[in-house]
Image: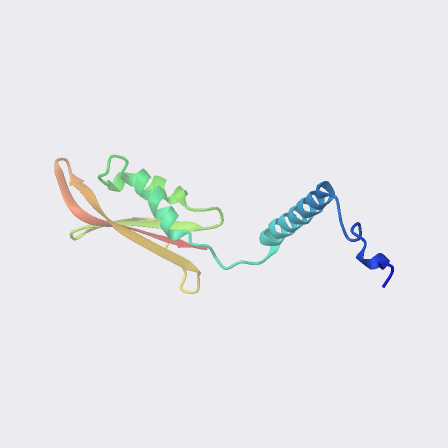
Length: 135
C-alpha cells in the first residue's frame, strides 16, 4: 500500500477551460452550418402559398377596406414566383374574375375571405374574395 498509481494522478484527464469552450463552440458552429446547408438542399413539400397571396391580393383590391373589381388585374401579380394567380370577387349575383383557371391536373391552393364590395358609387354589399394559386 505504498504508492499511488499514475492513473489516479490529479492532472490526468483535465483540460483547460479555454480549450473546452473553444471545442464546444467549434462543434456548435459545425452543427449549425450542417443544418443550414441541409435545410436548403433537402426536398420539402409545397409550402402554403394561398393565404399569404390572399393577404397581398386583399391589400391591392381593397386598399381602404372596401374591395372594387377594378384592381383584380393588378392583383394577379401578387403571387409567388413560379405560380399563377386567379382572383375572384363576388357580391350577391355579381361575379368578377381575373387570371387563368387552373388545368384539371395542375397543383393548386385556394384561400378566401369575406370582404365588403363596392358594386356602384355609394353602394357596398357583402362579398367574397377568393384566390386560386396554381402552377
